[in-house]
Amino acid sequence: MNFIKNLLKKQKYNTELLTAGQEPFLSAVAEKINVFFELIKIRITILVSFTTALGYFLASGNPGFGFIFPVAGIFLLACSSAALNQYQEQKTDILMERTKNRPIPSGKISGISVLVISLILLLAGSALLFFGANVPALLTGLLTYLWYNGLYTPLKKKTALAIIPGSLVGALPPIAGWLAAGGSITDIKIIVVASYFFIWQIPHFWLLLLMYGDDFRKGGFPVLTDKYPAEFIKKITFVLLTATVIMGASMPMFGISIYLLSAVLVYSASLLMFYVTFTFYLSKHLTRKEIIRTFVSINLYTLILITIYSADKLFYLL
Image (cartoon, rainbow, N blue to C red; front, side, top):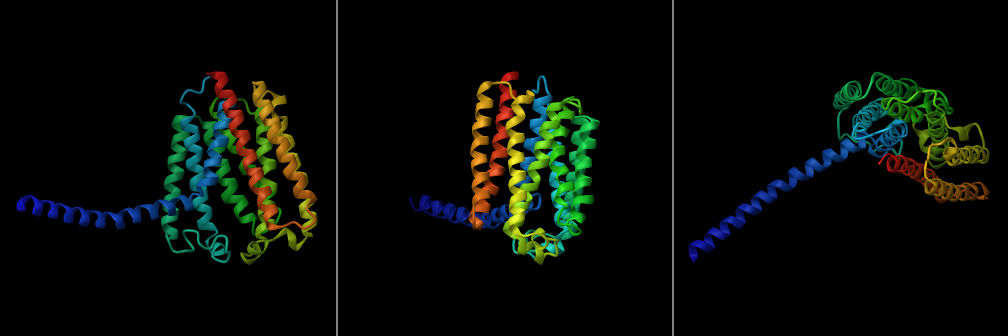
């Protein structure tokens, strides 16, 4: 009995040592994963992959599992682009409250490491698109990459209107998915879808500007509120929000959805978004809470549209 008791005590002691040794290791792994997710801006890049999938599903006559390669390829390119952007903006990120805790300015990772990660993701994403999709999809993905990091990122330092040409970045991923499935670039369906994501990007950013204008100024970025009154920006944002909802609600008219239920769900979501948009416009004193509510709503509306239109086409193909 004493032998068994001693054996059990020894086993318990060894287990405690092993657990104690595992906890720091697991914490370190979790921290590295969190840093990686911050680096690649996981919420944005996941949305990019969703829009790519939407384009693919709309063009495909039989998606099967073929969508995985273009979606994963564009996702990896978006992750690489996000990491490179953080390397490019590390000196301004450290000046702003919103971004000072990002991986590079907070010292969680070195700039050189970020460049290596970005390069690996770029090569992996390009390979997936080349071998798993087609050349048009690869070229569209690389154009998006160059447009974001080569044009939009430096242009933000030059003009507060950089988001207008920069919004092309939001329009290209669904085009990449569409082309990967063999769709024609002149098809009205993809033109309407791409136009929606182009327009949506602008009020999305200007709402951020209304929330973090002072922070952008600290980072040395030109701010619209320095040139125009906040009320004027609110009106322009309202117009663009309205245009975004109209474009989203008009998609069933171009054959982007097949089922009546899908159209009903889209129109219902659009009516709710119209209500939020008009509430935003009619606010006499635009509070931070109202801006955040509108910002979250337009992003949620976009996610709902992606889900409805993707599910509609998938159910039809099944």
